[in-house]
Length: 167
Image (cartoon, rainbow, N blue to C red; front, side, top):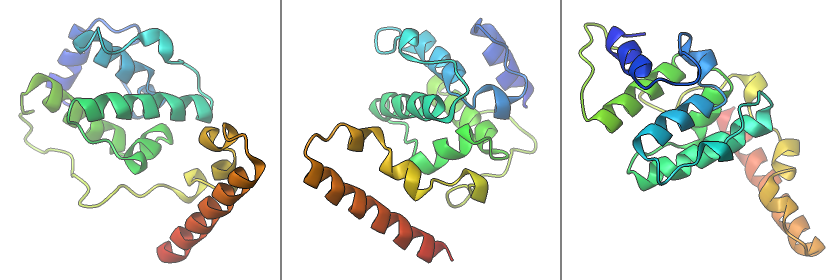
């Protein structure tokens, strides 16, 4: 991790120190805490869970993505899924981009970590399954059984199409 980035994170006086970026920001709590330092009126740290369960991590990152979108920082689901599944180099790349976006400073690195030209590759064990999609909280909220079934079938078909395209 670049020294300038370490100094920045230490200066924020976070609840937990960040030494292993891949592990430490996986659940999104530290990122939420960073954002609460810069945007205290727009983010409440109490709405984030410091848990390790996948659904908690996903919920945290969905909230973070919404906040960052308001701040003109694009965070696509594939990226934050790779972060909360601890894919190599994605968390560090994200943290560097976040630093540069928030502070409006460029990191001066001799060897900057390689930026992925496309979306990061999520390991096969961490990819979303059709079962996970069917349990999505947006689907659970639908009261009408027929509507819920239609949306579930649509999601599963889209998921299967995506899997076929990847092969």
